[in-house]
Amino acid sequence: MTTSDLVGSHIETLKPYVPGKPIEELERELGVTDPIKLASNENPLGPSPKAMRAMQKMLKNVHYYPDGAAHEMIEAVSAFHNVRPEEVINGNGSDEILTVAVRTFCEYGRDSAVISEHSFAAYGIRCQSHNLEIRWVSTDEGLGYDLGAMAEAIDETTKILFIANPNNPTGTYLAADDLRHFLRSIPEHVVVVVDEAYHQYVEAEDYDTALSMRDEHERLIVTRTLSKCYGLAGVRAGYAISSPAMIDRMNRVREPFNSNSLAQVALPAALSDREFVERSVAINRQGRTTLEAGLEKLAPLGVDWIRSQTNFLLVQMPVRGRTVYDELLKRGVIVRPMDGYGLPKWLRISLAEEQKMKRCIAELGAVLQELDVEVV
Ligand SMILES: *Cc1c(COP(=O)(O)O)cnc(C)c1O
Image 1 (cartoon, rainbow, N blue to C red):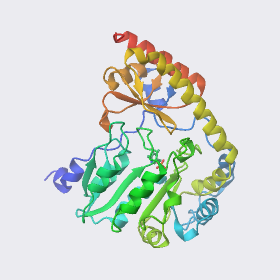
Image 2 (cartoon, rainbow, N blue to C red):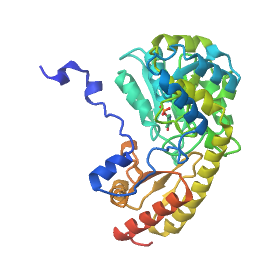
Image 3 (tube, rainbow, N blue to C red):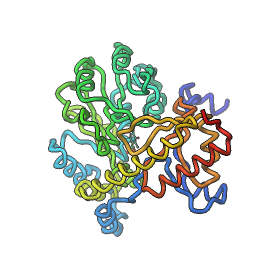
Image 4 (cartoon, rainbow, N blue to C red):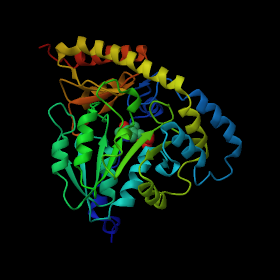
């Protein structure tokens, strides 16, 4: 008997999540000095200073177990969004809440899930590891969600459906009216997760948070993370808002100490740090302007990109994205190849300060020239 005989084929064929390459790994492998990482949509400003101070104070208490009820976190989220504490669940990052939702509501090996292609990789991985049948739905031509096709993919077996708004890795978004109409049309046996990891960066006038659409669908779960705009990716802090009945069921499944002591003090501090969020959004907007201006100059080489409401741009290369990715690595610029997302010609580039954006453009231009990409 081999180990593969012990696991179902859904585990044997499961491809693990591939994170962005850490800076230290690149330094180790290629001996590159002074690399920049534009691969994981992390905050270029670092962590919220208020959150850092709160965590420093907590350090001397980490020999205690964290509060299993995550009281301070739940209260902070409740006050921040003006919802009842019973409508909030805390997560070890918002990723964990996706796992908890799948494990709570989906029957292992029986139910199906509806997921759009070119969407956040965690959705597919969580559903496959729970042995669900996944209905993959194609995007529209602009790589945005095709809500009509997603609704059509639902049947009696469908228990969960995921929407990232705005979406990673495309940067596209759904207008409030379209999402509202969609939610209204979804049968009540389907849990709809609307993942708002990039909410703070959105500038589109016709966008709105799904928190304003809670009356449209009884089984709506809205997730938020502290990993992006609050600069706390390494701490793992996220939360979700849903009905008390839904939250109650998920709380039965969630691990009691899923939010560590540092996350529990970092989250309330970060949520209160509005000035930091404003700076993060401002530097992001500036980074986008700089990167787009640079990409415009590379357009004659066959470079194109999608308009983004997030802290990254999805950029199309004239050649295989991975080829460009490898060459950029040698030059100390870490971006994210997209072949794993079914987008082999694309790279995802996180937005950051002006100098980093300029360096990225300079190296990208040099790589494309080196690869002898013909000007068209
Ligand atoms: C980055 C990201 C998250 C955040 O996950 P955490 O577990 O909270 O770090 C969630 N959803 C999407 C779509 C993301 O891109």
